[in-house]
Length: 469
Ligand SMILES: *Cc1c(COP(=O)(O)O)cnc(C)c1O
Image (cartoon, rainbow, N blue to C red; front, side, top):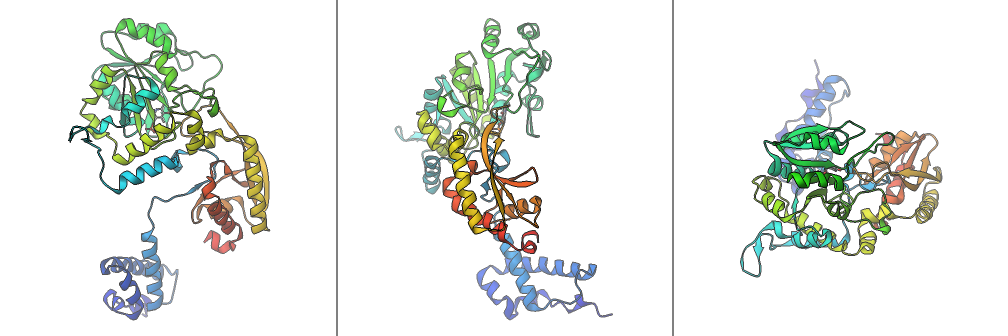
């Protein structure tokens, strides 16, 4: 027997060999040794399965260990370029932050802050006071509270107002927002009992009236933020719900989800319900996400009547879902931009991407196509009209007119092209439609354009073996 595995040197011998000198000069010994062990395991497996026959030499083992170390250096969370055209893409991190929000975040990250310190009194303060004044000003509500995300906001609100008691909700609003958020499960986790009323397509005022009893604590409404119903449908709006709730002394809680602060022509989101409208119609508490139509960081925002928010502030669960200082910094800077809708539409990237007009998108797609055609002459590039979504559970049923780059390359399938872009530096995420790779510049920020062009060029000009290996 002449097993090549026997000819692999020991870990100690390798670590003291000349080939490992450079690796050990750059990194701690334990890190290099760990990567070396994994490399040797892989090599032994390849030799055992017959994937290779010759024993590796020292230099090859060192090169593979180096590759292993480099792969470990890469963080798992990486920046990508979103060429899907979906501005609030949940899988790609929803809203990119405005420059002002990034600056505020960097400033607070860089040192200490008055997170829980009252600078006027020189005494302990509350993190829950930041953003509150602005949220009151922007919404007109009595009070506000910021938590980790909207799912947490809903659990917290229902836990405080209805634990051990009943929450009444229409069967048409038993919404699922992505696999992990289902309204019935969230209500159950809050400790409240769900009482379903009406039918999937129609719920009437009398359905709510009949469901109200001594155990009822909340009338809940959930925005159908990621689907729409049409045909033989009817629902009870906030105003009518408030009219039922008030005489019964019950609060109306509205999970608005998408969190459009107010209707503004600049945004062109006519069908989307907004916070201002919900409060005016009589909602006592409204909850929504910070990273959907607000265009800020991940957060859950609760606004509404002071007395109710005061109770929620004292709930011990608040400690479990509180936000960090980086979120508060980015959120406050984003809220400041919302004081003026035109500023919001121009300076908040997600809003600007949603509001981008078709003609300028078309011109931009053409300019990018021309540049790519020059750099990758073998590629076929067309600018075609398409539609996209706002994403992130916002603006259901509403489509945005858009212009995409349709890319094909003789000898390469669209699946290979899509994968090559995704493997780029930085990765570019597009989508496949009608047998072609489609790249939508709507969601590629101006400052990303040079990198986008380089990464796509690399994917279009790489050898087939490189790109698929
Ligand atoms: C998005 C959404 C949620 C979940 O919000 P997160 O901030 O992602 O936790 C809950 N309810 C509705 C109606 C939503 O649209």
